Every structure is written in structure tokens, then in C-alpha cells.
Length: 468
Ligand SMILES: NC(=O)c1ccc[n+]([C@@H]2O[C@H](COP(=O)([O-])OP(=O)(O)OC[C@H]3O[C@@H](n4cnc5c(N)ncnc54)[C@H](O)[C@@H]3O)[C@@H](O)[C@H]2O)c1
Image 1 (tube, rainbow, N blue to C red):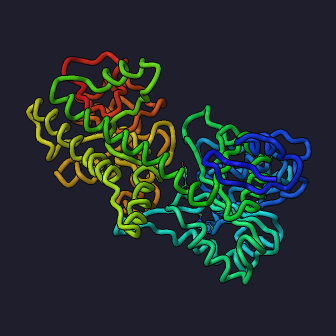
Image 2 (cartoon, rainbow, N blue to C red):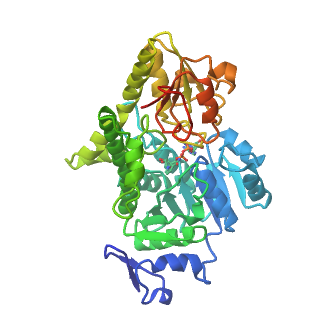
């Protein structure tokens, strides 16, 4: 018996349970079928970060025993003490899973021997030349390969270019295990979809795209995710699943670039782009709102599109949309700095020697994740022009070590009180956290440059707020 996916390709199924089912039937099988497979009761998740930790907890909650593997001893220690290290994940959720014996953590990769599946959620950054760095994936592959056994499933979740799973990871796993992918062990790719800071976003509710090396690999991976996730979306290959994730992130990058470009143009025409977007989004079809900002941030949108750009070269292809979007988005910090200079100039002040407070260091509202935050670029650019800079972020009390902005490590968020905030010549809102009191900001700061429309509901003095 076979299942046909949306694009017409075929999945072999295990037996009668599949007969006559339509595309998507695999989802219902994974979710509801009372004959849910008894196997897949113990898994390992490698990389216990923003993706791996919530995924571990969701599997643990669903009755799967999870062994978290990480090279960072502080995370392993935190998990065993029932302590969170990610703001939007409660310590109690970790403590409960550990106490129930459903979740443990280790740095001993040999323990892969004990589990039926391994899910890999390690970082995929760009290197200094802005090329994909898949070394974390290949290092993980090399670490687990000697411990793979017959029938085990390996799933990659890290965002990457098409071909990583069935070329790069496959090669490392086969070499280190002396086993054959698709024959001795199963291999699949399933991209993570996370919306950090959105309390409505729950791992179990987000449909999971799954592509396998072979139909049997796909089936095995669907069975696994069906234990913890409500809707599974099978696709015909690892490459389609990898390409799906890139499409999703490129879509965001390109649309954000579009509104950033319109922001600059409309500002020159005396039109507020925020008002335009709010009006446009009342259209009940064919429009989806995206919002401008001071530049792209986070582990995904500024990075992932360039994974495809790099891979496209192998095929003699260009990715013009991706590169144009990158150009527009990465010019935003300079535009914002220009607006800061104009606003100060209006008060007969120069940027050089002015004290500027950056409000918001995390890359998006209501999270503590500062990776790739454009606030770092704003801090760098303002400082390079002679400004005295500081930041306030209720979620980032101190800047920890980062791959690219080590110069700011150890800087502390300034306290939020009238005396401190009124001592700055200008406040620049780069991230609109809900935990910041914007009415107090209006009362205390002489000048505010707002890149997030955070001041829209707050009454301010004439010429006090400049949009950027
Ligand atoms: N953060 C998000 O919102 C998000 C959303 C979708 C997809 N992703 C993708 O998921 C992947 C992971 O992202 P993240 O945000 O969870 O990263 P992260 O940096 O928060 O976590 C990665 C974890 O992997 C560990 N690690 C690094 N190398 C390792 C190795 N060799 N062996 C074991 N552990 C290792 C690190 O110590 C860390 O705990 C990336 O590919 C990212 O693009 C992230």
C-alpha cells in the first residue's frame, strides 16, 4: 500500500491501516490512531537550546523518555537542578519532567546506544565570509555515528540548505557507523518552527513537516513526531523539507525588506508606513502584514536565506530576491543612525558627545535572545560616531558572550528610573518589549527615536518622538 503526497510522490506504508486514505492521512494516523506504535518510547535530542529544550519537554510530556545531549555542561547541570536558562520556558516544566523520570541530560554521546531515535537541533550559523557553517551538524554526526545501531532513526532539525541531510550528514553517519542509511538506520529531516515570545505558540500545535531519505525513513519519522505533535505534514524527501524551511524564512526576509524600503520612501513623502500597514491589513484576502524595524535579528531570518544563496552557486543560479532583501535590511541600522542625527540636529545637538540610550537589546519583543540583534550594530555605529551609548532591556540584564559582538560582553542594562533615563540626550527604541513603560519614557526622555511604533499610544510633546 502507498500514500501519495501533495506533489504526487509515493510513500510505502506498513499495511492495511493506510488503505484508501487521502493525502494528509498520515497526519491523522500519527495523531489519533489507537494503534500508535509501541516503539519510539525513548529518544535523544542533541542541542538543548531554544529549539531542543522545548521539543524535549513536549516529547517528555507526551510519554516519550528524552535524553538531552549537549556539549554545554551548564545546561546539563541546569536541567538536573530543574532550572531554566530560557526566559519563556518555566523552571517548573523542566523540574516536573526530570522528577517524572521522563527527561534527563548528559554529555555522553555513547548513550545514543540506549535510544530508538536521535533528533539533532544544533546551531547553523554563517562563518566570517557569510557562508554556511554546518560544522556543528557534522561534529554531532561524528559524535553519534559510532553508537548508532540497527533500526535507529536520526532526524536533523537544524535549518540548512537542501542536501545537508542526504549528503553531508549521511556521509558522516555512514563513515562513523559502518552502517547504511535507509537500510540499516533511518534518516530524515524535519524543520523546527518556533515563534519565541508568542505565548500562543505551542510546540504540539505547530504542524511538523517531515521528509525521509526513503519512504520507510519518512514513515518512521512521522510515527515519532506523531507521538508529540498534532499535525504531521509528510513531504517526499529530506531536500523538500529542507527547502520548505528556507522558503518560510526567505518569505519573511523579503517581505520585511519590502516594508523597510517603503518605510524610507514613505517617510520622505511625509507618510507614516505604520498607518499604511494598519490600513492595508484590513484587506481580508491577499495581504499579510509585515512590519519595518532597525534591521533583522535572531538566529534565523538574517542567516538562513544565505544558506540557499551559497548552495545555489553550485547549480549556477542566482538568488536575487534574497540578496536584495539582505541589502535593504542590512542598510536599516545606518538609516536609523541618520534619523538619530537629524533628531539631535533639530535640538542643535551633535551625535558626537551625545548620550544615547538604546531601549531593547533582544532581537524581538518579549524574549531574552540577543543573537544577531540589530541593536548591537546600532551600538557600534553610534559609538563609532562619538556618541556615549548605554542600553536598557528588562530581559537582558547583562550582555553575555556572543559570537560576533564580544566587545559588548559584560555591559549591563541601566536601571529604569527618572534620574537615569532623563540623563540621556535621546532614547532609541530598537525593540518594543511589553515590559517597558513607554509613558514613563515619554515623561523622562527629552527625545525618542522609535523604530517599532512603540510610542503610538503614548502622548508625547511636539517633536519629542521621531519615527525611524
Ligand atoms: N531559535 C529559533 O527560534 C529557531 C527556530 C527555527 C529553527 N531554528 C534552527 O534550529 C537550530 C538550533 O537553533 P537554536 O536556536 O536552538 O540554537 P541554540 O544556540 O539555542 O542551541 C543550540 C544548542 O546546541 C548545543 N551544541 C552546539 N554544538 C553541539 C554539539 N556539537 N553537540 C551537542 N550540542 C551542541 C549548544 O550548546 C546549544 O545548547 C538552528 O539551525 C536554527 O537555525 C531556530
